[in-house]
Image: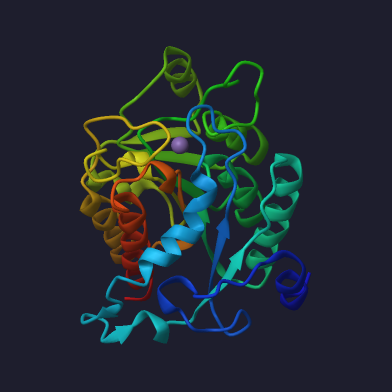
Length: 288
Ligand SMILES: [Mn+2]
């Protein structure tokens, strides 16, 4: 599938692209997409509004980076816009896999603004090679349940279990802190699952990675508007320190997603603003 077809049929172009990024899809080496999907959310829905809100607040952030002596609009990044609002995961899944496979074939890095965490499954399925690539996850939770809620195989709480089963890529969790008994037992018996409990151990994750950031990894004091807030979380800067270290080790980042922000329950846009800032800083780190 060519990129014109992608843009014409599947994307709603944003009125204002993320943080003013300015390249077109062909010339850019990094694509940003928004996925307004929250159909499996078990508690408070609203993450479907995050791509729109995160773009809006990103316009209020400064976008010049003195270390790189460049503004974000000078980096070869294109914002393709949002995929359509779908409430049916099977259809969304096919579409996201197709977009990710196109990005992979065209050697584009894929940055996704979610949406709930389930969207990571079709994206990594289309983007990653399970024999070469690995997945680094920032999340308070493991998302390894077999079903949640009852009888639901595909939800934000089962996404990493399905990724292990259907994609097979190895998963590294950075400092998770909320476990169910079932998930912990599964973690112990699946050798493709790893816990990174110290920044120095980030060196083990491999040379080609995908970064999935569930904003509930961050302490609720900094990111209150998430579906399942869990106290005693990360400081926001810790995520950037990890990304910086990956860069220093020459790790290639094939894609990034930031998921689970719910603007409907946010406080003065704190969570949306932090998600926008983290994305912006990651973009600069990828080009340093
Ligand atoms: Mn999650």
